[in-house]
Amino acid sequence: MSRLNLTMLRPTLQGRYTDQWLLGSGALLLVFGLTMVASASVAVAERLTGDMLFYFRRQLAFAGVGVFGALVMYSVPMRYWSKAGFALLGVGLLLLLLVLIPGIGHEVNGARRWLDLGPVNLQASEVARLCIILYLASYVTRHRAQVQTRIRGLLRPVLPLGVAAVLLLAEPDFGSTAVLLAVAAVMLFLAGAKLLHLLILGSVGVGTLAMLLVSSPYRLQRLASFRDPFADPFNGGFQLTQSLIAIGRGEWTGVGFGNSIQKLLYLPETHTDFLFAVIAEELGLVGVVALMAVFGVLVWRGFLVAQTAAAREDYFSAYVAWAIAAWVGLQASINIAVNMGVLPTKGLTMPFISYGGSSLVVTCASLGLLLRVDRENRIAAKADGPARSAGAAR
Image (cartoon, rainbow, N blue to C red; front, side):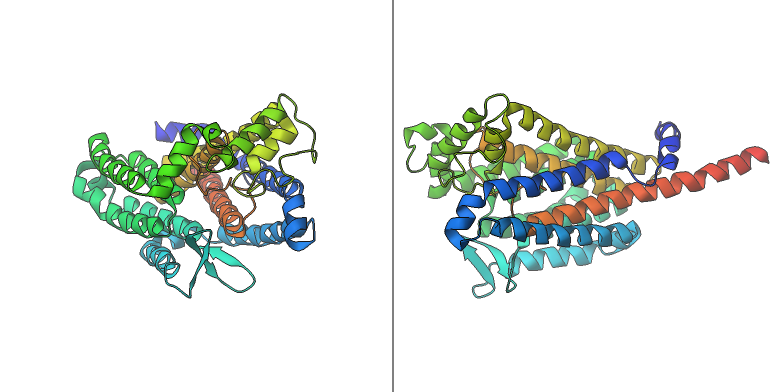
């Protein structure tokens, strides 16, 4: 079946240099994000810095670094990332450990998630997540038989995942922990792990996260505010109520680009975690649906790239592509759900869209990695075509 799928895809792969839908959707999200950051951040930027375009200029610089990072990732063959899996795990865990050390880790709003690098802050969890994904893909590729048949085969990669989760929760960063574990579960499921084994490990993980949730006063407060934000609209529920007001004002077609009222210092975090609310206010339901459709295209093409890599039995590339596509889709969905009050408030940005240098650079680099997998798919299809023709001639 996999050979049949690859045969069907070969004409498409040979016809173009890269997946135009994948590249186009990523580029469109990047440009749209820059535009919305410029719109949503004007009031807060003027109040804090005196320059209405301060955050836009910084985001534009981050976008330049991100595009460069994407080109670097695109230029490196996947076999090198596969061989570096264990080293990348070490880098990821080291970053998560360094951020917890006083004097090295930078604390903002009670959370120690950033490494102070002078002019910029590096959010360790963003880089660590990509490193751990690459390690997990490498492990699963090398030990597929054990992962598919024995629970011990699952425990080996789950142990470093557990260490990473503990370090993330110590920051604390509950949202990033949930995303990392969810993406890891997707990878292990697609690698053929038994559903029973995944359910056992998943139950332990969910139970642990639930215990941490109920044992933390500030998380319980967030949960209470999420359940009924209008019960305390000027304190715990303030952010969510203002977000819902912004979304409600957008109606079908929005109030027009640049005309948001909520971004004028009513809604906190307008250019970061709650940028989606400003998008909904200014562009309405039509703009929101269009944005979700572009994310859907990117995830769809990412899964198609992964399927093609699996069909040619390059499982490492396939797992990486599946993980990146799932990561982007899952994090975007969680961000939208938080803005709409479907999930409790978490410090998760919308990929490509929200302001944040670490998130934007790592997301762009991940897209470059996804495009690299697509490139190798096309090189393999092109090389296989003449080989088949020569075989037929003989």
